[in-house]
Image 1 (cartoon, rainbow, N blue to C red):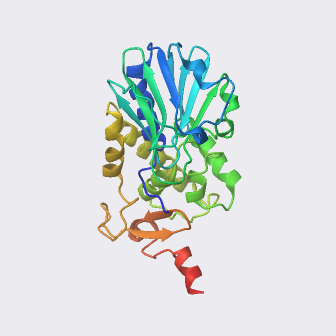
Image 2 (cartoon, rainbow, N blue to C red):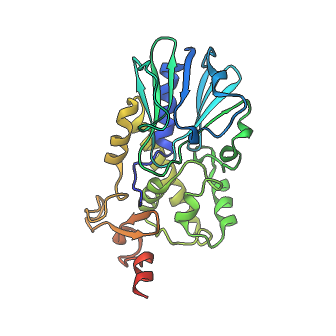
Image 3 (cartoon, one colour):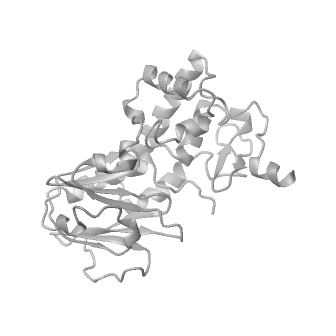
Amino acid sequence: MRHTGWVPELPEVESLAGFLRERAVERAIVRADITAISALKTYDPPISSLVGLLIDDVQRHGKFLDISAQGIHLVIHLARAGWLRWREEQSTGLVRPGKGPIALRVILDDGSGFDLTEAGTQKKLAVYVVRDLAEVPGIVRLGPDPFTLTLEEFSDVLKREGRVQLKGVLRNQSVIAGIGNAYSDEILHVAKMSPFKPASNLSADELQQLYDAMQETLRDAVDRSKGLAAQDLKSEKKSGLRVHGRKGQKCPVCGDIVREVSFADSSLQYCATCQTGGKPLADRRLSKLLK
């Protein structure tokens, strides 16, 4: 199964955090029901320990959503096919374990709440209940957030990665936190750079160009999503993408056809005219099939 750009990344998780801050902070959790046992990655404290606690903040760490309640953190990673569905009047019915897409149901003291859902068969959505964020391995491994990086720090990051291709560097969570397949394509398109260009092979002007493209692309996506209801974030992301997920369509900058390179479980999209001097990149998967 190859995945396109509707996977939650930094801008969507940032917007979800803001959405929940407005609605859930200072509300008490009255129920927290796990219905997909595989989604819960911790056991101490138990998920039942959340009941009765007052939510005091909601933050984002990379692609992780962190709901903190009086010293306990409910940490969520939506993975590729997970989503948060908010309801002003949450259903109080019990969800049968293993049945349907719901992995977690949370009900707050005013009757509102949310379900965590996951589509498809690859169940990667993860829920952690911890006292310390250091107990979440994925958070411990996170690189710096793009919004905290200075140009000099960004330069150091790229130099450390050496000959690794820019596409791989941008979406490596241990290098830079929060950017995934879709926004790495978008950043490289704005920067007018090949996804296969080595990270250490940038001039000073190219470094500035890539840094500005990263900041501009992510901030623009966050601004577009700000204030939207949770259910509207996916469609907003889709409508805002210029090349990712748009194979065969016209590049909005130059009018050339958006091209694709396919891998085993993902793909990237780019514009040859804007990014590679008009030269199409080799489709690695197709090349292997032809050998």
